[in-house]
Length: 138
Image (cartoon, rainbow, N blue to C red; front, side, top):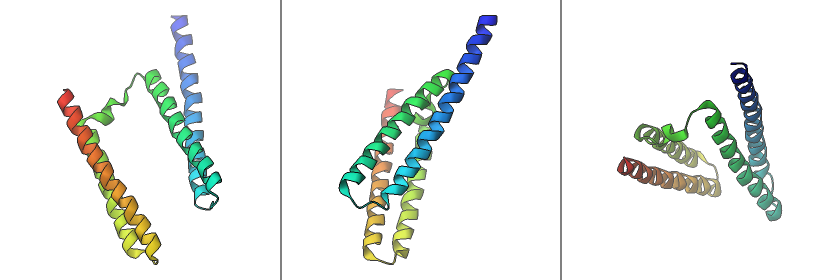
């Protein structure tokens, strides 16, 4: 029994440390994204994109380890209901971006916002296809 308590304490400590790292990674991502808005140098922008890409991967790895400790899986996101919620989130983002584009003062900003809204449309199609794949795998 004592060894099980020690193992549980070890897992709780590991989970706590991983959570701190997860939160730190998110903070770093927010910082890098914020910096991107002020940087015009292409090399620096490229470095920031690399940091962002690596940070996302780190969050994925850490989240996976935390889920294993918790005995959970990420499969709840890959259910018909979970995917439908993601599609609705993407739709809401698209609609908000289009409203912002309509309110933008300059044509360049409006075009950029409309471009991002097209990405949101693409995300919805990807998610719809993913939903079909999940359903056909059952």
